[in-house]
Length: 443
Image 1 (tube, rainbow, N blue to C red):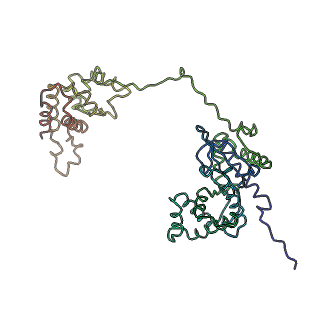
Image 2: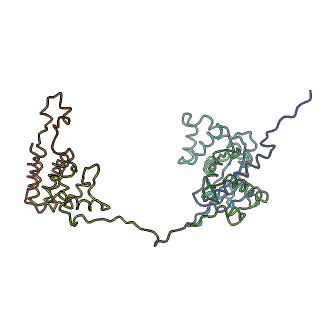
Image 3: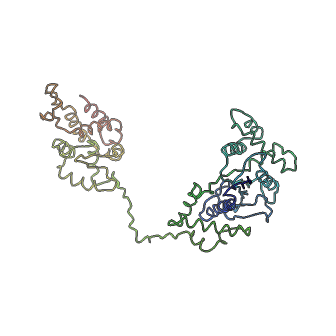
């Protein structure tokens, strides 16, 4: 039987690796056009993307991304090697080539600044073992204090992942080969790992997380069809990649630049805007400030309870209709201290209003308030006239208190405010407030 030809990987035979590289490069172009930020670099705008940087002296040459601080104009670079498929092992020749390129650039100050720049291996799907162990090693290199702490953590069996030592040996193996067969010192290895990054992208799939995020970036400028704009960017990048070009925003095709133009912000002329400013009323000097001070003492009352209304008229010294005319105007002020809900009047921010209006209270007002407080709080509950088994139906037998619950509660709180803040009543006789609170609270 004739030997059958082995099937090849459709991704590799169909140019999948080249398309993956173009999509990675295009993803950075999207970030540049939309104001996004490159991974592993400061959050500065991307100003330049170099494709196939070999001609400029880079060994890690698939992608060189340059960002710039808009204020200081300082620039930093990400040197990216793009490999769709790779294994972080001693026997993987592709990984050996990647480490060789990275080591050459790392030691070439004309293309790489150790104080500013980073190198990245940008990949498609990796094995879980490679992803977990290598990222752990790189994170440890960046997060430990020194090389001794790094190696201590790696060698700590219960602290490090099970195959982290194996992956570190694979890196050391390829670094030695890249270093002309000479072992790389622990210090140099530690510094190299500090600058090295592993970035995973799922752009080998038609539907993936990274592509969704890129569509979201594009949608900020072109909401209707980001899925059409993306292929246009990929196609542009593939064309430039063939010539090893350098992409800047001012060199891209006009139709792309038009898609990502900042939309003008139209402002309504100030003269057409009706400015509504919240008025702040000086309640301390309001024409009806004295009546508000009386309202603070009562706190709340039921508008439909005649006994409550009688209390208001006695303390205020005016008819209830006259008070309602005043209250209606106060109620419609933007920062009114009065509220009316479901027939219940209430004063808000009583303690604060008391500090403003307490000086309006005189001895006769305290005498009236004391008398009313004693009458209201001493009122016997007629429900107790009924047998115990009938008291639950006190309302049916009309055995209810004359004064509303809200008024009783408001009076009690008014006495508490008087007792805790007597100072605002500076026009009253000495100790008048204290005596009023004491008598008013006598059961």
